[in-house]
Amino acid sequence: MKQLTNLSGDVIPWDDLESHWQAKIKPICPNNPPYFISPDTQNALSQVVEYANQHQYSILTCGQGSKLDWGGLLRKPVALVVSTQKLNRIVEHATEDLTVTVEAGVKLADLQQTLQQANQFLPIDPSYPETATIGGLIATADSGSWRQRYGGVRDLLLGITFVRADGKIASAGGRVVKNVAGYDLMKLFTGSYGTLGVISQVTLRVYPIPSASLTIILTGELNYLNQARQIILNSGLTPTVIDFISATVVKQLEISSSPGLILRWQTIPESINQQLQQIQTIAKGCNLTSQTYQDELENNLWQRLRKIKESPNLITCKIGVIPNRIGEFMQEYARLTNNQGIAIIHAFSGLGKIAFGEWQAEMRRICENKQGFLTILTAPNSLKENTDVWGYTGNGLTIMEKLKTQFDPNRILNPGRFLGNI
Image 1 (cartoon, rainbow, N blue to C red):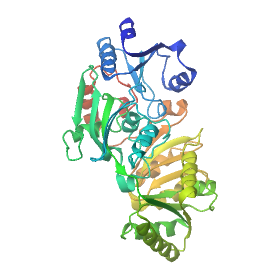
Image 2 (tube, helix red, strand yellow):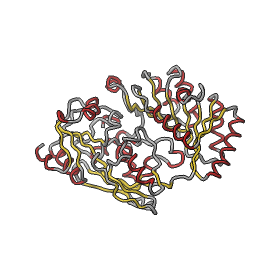
Image 3 (cartoon, rainbow, N blue to C red):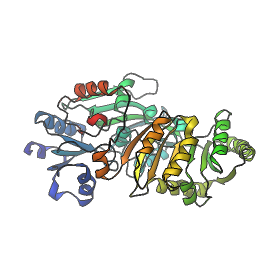
């Protein structure tokens, strides 16, 4: 490892590593990795990966480590933990083109502060937004409720630069919205958990900050909520957020003991006022109660909701069900968790996250019966060691294996973290 000490960036032996990093890494590593490396240039990152590939040293890659406990456990010891946390520069902000190019280690929170100065923002609302890095968001495909208006992570990704498993630097896409070259490659890297290459730089689409915002929560019986959902989606209403939230979430928000439908509008005030009147009419017709939040009350609401989503010591999962069966899923989920589970599910796509205290295999079967899936994100190692984290039953694994072999023939990048132990 002596060659690595000459690189720009930190090369830290495990015993000298800060305790908070040790606590993040240790649970998913079979053995303590000898070194933790934080390259501070793309070329230095390239040299680290090239060196590891030449010696067939396995690598665990991460940004700030906020999602290291997501996905599968590493299937063999790693020699290096490589963090992109020092690749934290904003390369270019093209305000008129509504694009921004950043290195992978830039924190989302820091990027939002910079964009705010130009009255712009990146519409991603992931888990752990204060510590999440842009590279980590793309690697885990972690977006959130804003997908109703702005799509998921890959819909915002215009260009990507990454370090291949052999250390070579490669790029796809571009820095302008109209450039779509390399789009398939960008889709491959979104949600690949760092198993195909190490993301070093990306270009993203950004949006102007809306001039006004309002959130409304409808509560009542699930069948009435489902009815309201259908009316809203078939109407001319244009919410930026429309999510089902479980009764547990509504209770913690101190609203009621019923499940809810949370909607948000972010546009000009006149449009918000008009749509508010329409949604209140829909709520009344569906026998639902409503509560409205604006300004500081709205900001506080979303901060509280974020804390609820990040409740510690719970098993968390990403799920998907066909949208017209979300209500059925919510009923069965409430039964399985004795009405104690946390669930936030996008009403249009059926994608969402759930959290609960005790694993039951029936949860996955319920999702699959509704033509969906369940992927375990965070859970005790004992569960991940004895349960298929991904639960994938499709026919794409052979193709994924071939892609892994093509991109990482020595299988040094995050071995075992992706489905099929890729």
